Length: 119
Image (cartoon, rainbow, N blue to C red; front, side, top):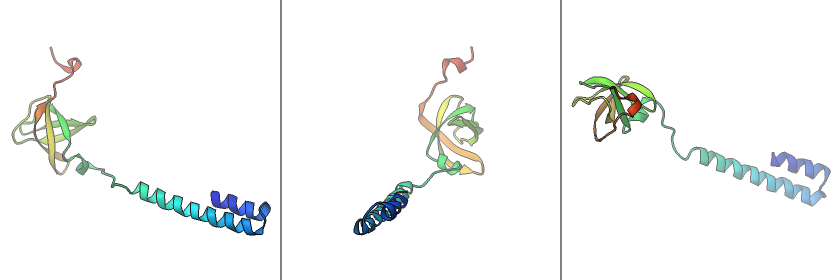
């Protein structure tokens, strides 16, 4: 956008030596801005898919003995926990087998909110 403005200024407003200067400076500005934007957008890789869940914590929603279900970010996943895990416990995802998360018990336990506990 700056380059177009500089060309228009060079043609219609600025005297001959300053028009060329305006075009060169705006070209340098546009190239610098493009390089900065590309580098900024590629600063880290996007983590997507089920593989991005490895290492994250999940909450058991259906008892894992050894197969059950866990919740991560509001999504319910099939899970396999060889040691077993009770409803409400926190587990850590250690791997993936198809669309089943391989989990292990975490040392911390998250209790259910009072609104979800049965009486």
